[in-house]
Amino acid sequence: MKTESFDAIIVGSGVAGGAAARELCQAGLRVLMLESGGPALYPGNQQQSFSNAANYPVQTRCYAFHANTSSYFINDVENPYRTNANAPFSWIRARAVGGRSLLWAGHCHRMGDLDFTAASQDGIGEDWPIRYREMAPFYDEAECLLQVSDARNEPYSAEVRNLIMAARLQKAGNQGLKFVPARISDDRLRLQMPCIHCGSTSEACVHPVTSRDSALAAAFSTGFLTLWPGAQVHTVSVDSRGKAAGVVGFQMTTGNIFEVQARLVFLCASTLESTRILLHSTSSQFPDGLGNSSGVLGHYLMDHVSGIIVTAVFKSEGDLLPENHRAGMFYIPRWQNLYGARSHSYLRGYGYQGFIIRADHDLLPCGRTNKRSILQKASDGDNRPTVRMVAFGEMLPRKENHVKLDKSTTDHLGVPALKITCRHGENEFAMASDMASSAIRYLEAAGGQITEVQNVPWEPGRAIHEAGTCRMGNDPRTSVLNRFNQCHEVANLFVTDASCFPSIGTQNPALTITALTMRACRYAIHQFRRGAL
Image (cartoon, rainbow, N blue to C red; front, side, top):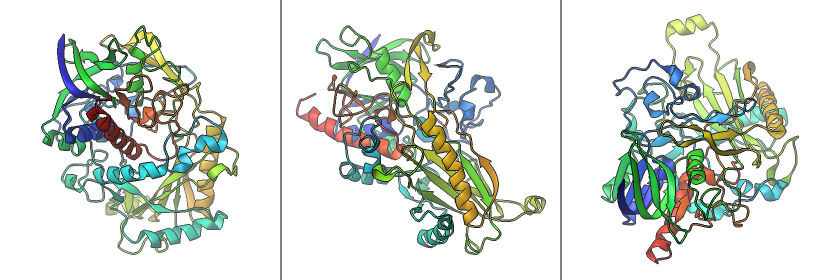
């Protein structure tokens, strides 16, 4: 058994792990990062063949899964999990240096006090123990790290486009509907690399910042980061004082056990993997999982209500897109049930990610557009511009949506798998119905002709925004972590991936995960230097 010691251990190398490594290393701490996957190559640079889709029955449901990215994903056969027969859950998992930051679409919108105080407004769940004014400076820094800006394929003034579209959509009678530019993580230094979703090197594609190429690169430049790829952690070890002593796991290539020690432990392995590690970390002091005296660990699993997509065509491009301009993207933030006002048949709400597509372009899997050939256009027989609205809604936090260890099912290394119990409730189905009907109503009012409607929500997990199960809060009786993502019962243990979310909001989670991680690291560094940890 290999035993080494560091100032800090980080489990996971995605957006949370990368941000943690950057913060801790730049503060001068000796950091070990443990990643269960191996080094990842860019799409188009991989020399591999992919033929056995049977090993990836869940992962193939991800929009970014194809032959060139298959090595990023987990093998479902070797790494099973269980669900109830009537409650499917698609757990999309990446195992590669950079984690799911290698696969994301880059949408970055901030959460606000509407989201952080949702429980106070409708009595469901618990409020976040933070407010927007505390998060704002960390959002600023996170946006710099992720290189967030208005989508580069916004061809003309967002204000002009928004006025055009808003005026048309508000004919449907909703004066509160607002448009904002799509905010996208876009690493322009990666333009020479093929788009991970469509394989194109077109400037129309956005190349979201990856943990590997930004935060991890910055951490490595300090000389304080050590990376162990192929290292699967299964337990956080605890000393006689009840503090985290380090972690124990398997070296994937050999199956050998390793143990490493540190004064700080950061779990950033993704929502369900971090919770799986904590549930597996039992002892006489924590028989139900590390830091789980509250019994909350594993509960309140959420994912966005997704899969509702409505597409319409318009008679001419003139009213939507100025001549000789590319297509555009826009975002419609939540407008339902604001600050306690109950204006719909469901609680909370949803927003739309929107795409305006030129008549001579196709929408690619990455959400960008690509010019069609003359032959394609001729065969279409219809060269009208298209608007597509994709909805993401808030799933309520409910205790019955949970995960637990299933010792009768193990992965290929013998570690107990998770049993995931997660269902959409009446609130989510009512919301999904309104997502579809509202999009149809607004697009028709704007002069569009509906061509496609997907009105059945995907199963939970499919949005790849899973959150909860290790939530933060002020009360140790109802939460696992405090307002700095620090375990209430284990002071030198921090969890900063989306498992910490008390509620999920409507926004894509990566930006908030990054900001929370930065905030938690600054607090941990301060406590570390004063000897409190």
